[in-house]
Each structure stands twice: as C-alpha cells, then as structure tokens.
Length: 299
Image 1 (cartoon, rainbow, N blue to C red):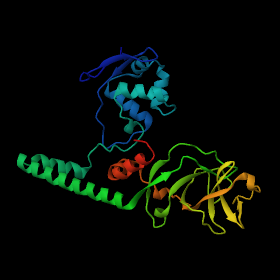
Image 2: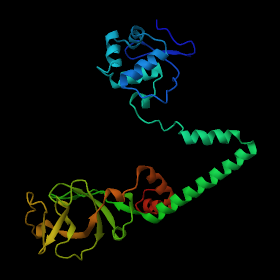
Image 3: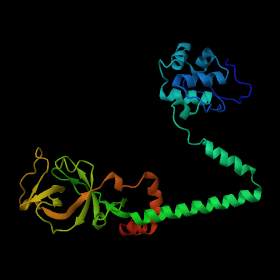
Image 4: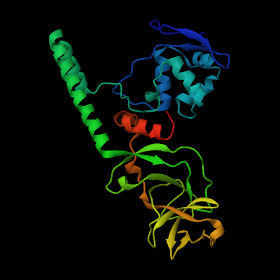
C-alpha cells in the first residue's frame, strides 16, 4: 500500500480500471522553478511520499510506465492524466507549463500586504474606492460597446456561390458588428456557401447586404432563383462567377431570377466582438434585442 504524507487528508475511490485512486490535497507550487512534464509528476509523487511501485499499483500500470512518464519517454493518456492529477494534486497549469493567472504578481502581493496593514476604516475606504473605479470602468466599457457596435440580422438562408441554396423558412439570428462607416447601411448579413466566388468571397464568409433592386454593372448581388439564393457578379445584365473554374450557366425566364440586394462588402474578423463582449452587448443593447425577438415572434 502506498505511503502517504502524514499531513494528507485522503479519500479513496475506485477508478474505471478498478484500481484504488487516492485523492490528495493540492501541493504547494514552487514559484521559482519550471518543470518538464515528467519532472512535475516526479515532484508531486515525492511530495506525497510515494515510490514508483506504489504509484504504479494505485494507477493500475507497471513501474516501467511510471519511469517512462517521469523521464519524458512517454506521456499518459488524457483520462489517465485526469486521474493522476487528482491523485497527486497536480495543477494542470503546472503539468503543461501554463501561466497561473490565479497567483498574485509581486506588485499585487505588496499592495495586498499594505491593505492588510490598514485599519478596518481604512480598508472600507479602499473598498469604496475600488468599487467606484470598477463602476466607472464598467460604465465606460458599456458606452464604448453601445456606441461602436450595432445589431445586424444574419439571414438563415445562405447565398450559394454555386447553383443555389434552398430557402430556409426560419427567422434570422442577430449578430453584433463593429461600426466602420459603411456597414451601418446594410440591412442584413448573409453567409456565402461554395467556392465559385473565390478569391474574393470564400465559403463561410459573411457579407453585408443592402436590400435593393437598383444595382450597377459590376456589382456583386444576391439573387433569388428557381434553384435558391445565389451570390454573383452582374455584368451586362447577366450573372457571373468570379471563379473562372466554376462558371455560372445561362439563365432564362423559367429560372425566375430576381435581384434581392447588393453586397456592400465582407465582414472582417476585426468587426466581430470578442466572445467575452457578446454577453455585455446583449445587456447594453437589451432593448434592441427585445425588439428583434418581438419582430420575429421569438418572445
């Protein structure tokens, strides 16, 4: 049986491999040292006063396997890593050499130490100052998001760069887009499907669309056809693909080609909000979101 640290409080469970799994409290991290994968395993095995045979027995593997892990000749499978970290109290950030954002920096430790020296009255003053500054920063962030992003509709039916996408009879989604001077005049966003408009428009690209039948020669247009929705270039009252390898065939009156709108441009990744900002935008623009949902019967 494995010899455990005298300070450890343990809970023994059974793993899926029917070997005992001992859950130990997380060991302290040496802030000054950096470890390779195998060295981290060896460090925490030693902290828990386990020999390689004892750890091998608990993990249901051979001693040679433990030796290979610790010498970086092999690495455990994902599920084995989960059990190993739980057993020895290894933080994942240390095992994989990742930064630990939960640890205080040297400056933060100094500030925290000074805070603890303050009287209760002084600490309350500092608390109120922090709350005030945090509130001002949040207000400034909300104003920035409200002033620099607008809510746009992403149509459920994509526009094919090929023969046509069948129309999908479902409401659009809303997306938040950063204003850039011209995209606010767009009525909707439409996703490109296919490769016949490369190299300008690729499969999966989002394009800004202005609903209009007033277009000029050379414009990129969205059209409704008997085959579905398409994105093409209009030249001499005909539709063309930009990709010469995937030409668009001649159309007749039976194809019921109708111009739906003009493409104003392509959505840049820089115009999309960060994932963390989407929830904030939904709060800042809650009224617009409600109006959108009401418009399409989503409430």
